[in-house]
Image 1 (tube, helix red, strand yellow):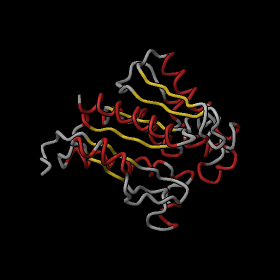
Image 2: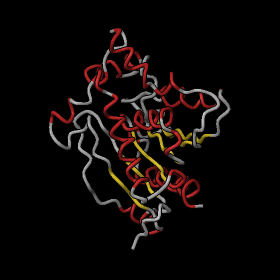
Image 3: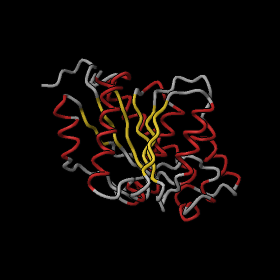
Amino acid sequence: DMKMDGSNPTLLNAYGGFLVSQSPAYSGATGKLWLEKGGVFVVANIRGGGEFGPRWHNAGLKLNRMRVYEDFFAVSEDLIARKITNPKKLGIVGGSNGGLLMGVALTQRPELYNAIIIQVPLFDMIGYSHIGAGSSWIGEYGDPAVPAERAMLMSYSPYQNLKPGQPYPRVFIETSTKDDRVHPAHARKAAARLKEYGYDYLYWENMDGGHAAAANLNERALRQALEFTYLMQQLMD
């Protein structure tokens, strides 16, 4: 019974990397805390992922990385064009490599979104290869020490592309002190730069939990409660 009048609060999720497939799945939290309250949930299968095999993944590697983000923006624009939602009612969420995607969306197309949840993200793509386990991902993103690959990384790296005076929505950044995969320095640097430029933002760093930003069910429930409260404030209130 959803009305196609552009008024539906919508949450869009994607990953777009490392041959990972984002397939439809049951989520009790999303169902109870979002769908039952009138929200719409969308999963975008974008290049860089594994949904359509190795070629789909390879199409978004290194110098072709912008294809990943262009796909995500195209899905966002289609949700608006089909009047499922509008920019004031459209929120996005992604973690890790998907957190990088959220950072790119924030810095390149902020006018499309009114809520962005940036979970355990990569954010500084010029320094990433020297932060934590970053050097192990050079095959995916490229090497900042190689001029052509550095130029591509610089073109989309969220940290380097944050600017003052932009129409950024209030974002929600999450990380974990004990994240041994993507170092919390990325999220901390993002928050510090947003603060430096005078933006309103939310930041939550769990002391436990590794890359999941939650060590147990109670901590996961708290994280999800914070996320959906933020989404309701931004997209439903």
